[in-house]
Image (cartoon, rainbow, N blue to C red; front, top):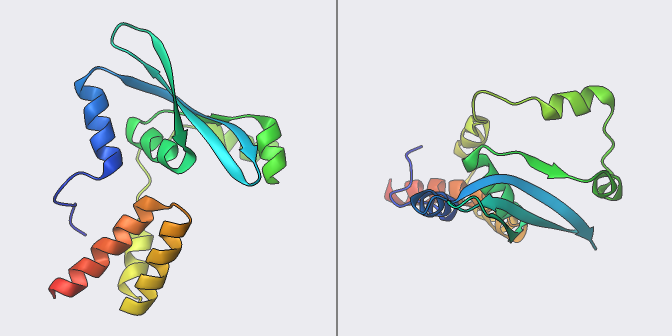
Length: 147
């Protein structure tokens, strides 16, 4: 899969923030109401002033991945979401990884799908606000149109 010819929105955000010396230090998922997660980007200005920026959780996570910063939440949110962590799971979620996670399995999966299946997957990804996944599916559909 070739990289997009223009930066994706989250990559643009990272370039913009870095150009103006803004650091994204952490993402905090701070609330869960009626199945909707609420998140903030915890940033620092070049002068060292802390700034909180409200964000959709899907966008906040995509930005956290790009800035390699932690994503934190509260125990009540995990409980409310029905997520139960045992000690071994908790330990594995706090370990930092050296290499970024790639979606090679997803890419291989897209190649095995029909165009109609990919269109359905694209609709589902957009509805669930999984924009990065949607962009990869869109790229595969565009590659097929060119062929």
